[in-house]
Image (cartoon, rainbow, N blue to C red; front, top):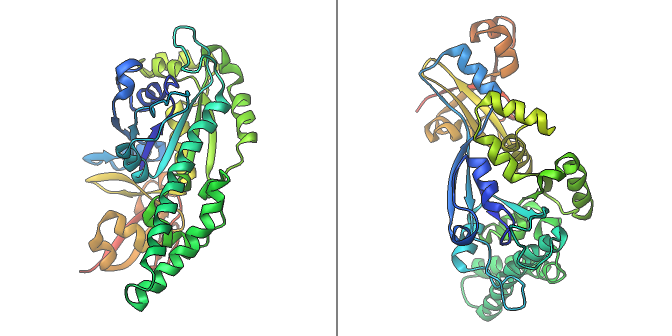
Length: 365
């Protein structure tokens, strides 16, 4: 899973990146012009307990790649200029967007517009994404109109299906409506999949609040969420600077600091959990003497999909899957006990994998 971190200048997006990745990327000034990439291991207590049970040679958690992109350049009127082509390419390759919006006051870090207005900044970058997608739609429609009767019958029919979907999308984008708000059916979504539209991607809004706003962070997030009813979006508020400082402490010190600040779960876990929800992902596990590992697949995946996530040979030669819920396995203490107690089941190709399944694939190639 790859998540692109975006935000206007002085929003604190690189501080959020450092918080999530435990990195030390330069913030502010020229640091904001750099692309930063970090891979984060997804914390999962279930995997930790499986490792304690099986005592394997290694533990492999799921991971998320975060890409911190430079803030878009500002035009002379103070609004963002067009997003550079290389940044657009990175954005289109992302599975989701993490949009950092400044909500903190700090005289030492001047806002480029002179005032802090989270809603204004949020709408500004959202508009840039809408315009970027609209430009792609209009350019493609021009090409389709120019192609006329060229190509084979099959190609013309395919072009016509694409044109119909794009003609439906264009007025929505013109009105400022993101594509993720449209009721596209499975076929329509498949037709436009190759465009990787920005406004089709799930978005996690991170409101970067100041230290003094931490007690009311949840109400700050709720207020923005009420005004941002777009589909496939979530809103969370946190103080990136404080969370980054906590991340540099050892576990015991961090726990005390969190209690003193009135913080609950670490921001890393909250952001990753919300990212999984947005993308409709689940985790299943494999466990044995050599390795315990967490795997990530889309919700609704079947046993063959899970086998393919492990290795294509397992999907190709799939016979059946031995499945037990991780909670049952941890309670009973072994696969043998799980089988003896009727908790280990044999499932076929169409079995729908559940979050927390421990799976052993039987195959023959």
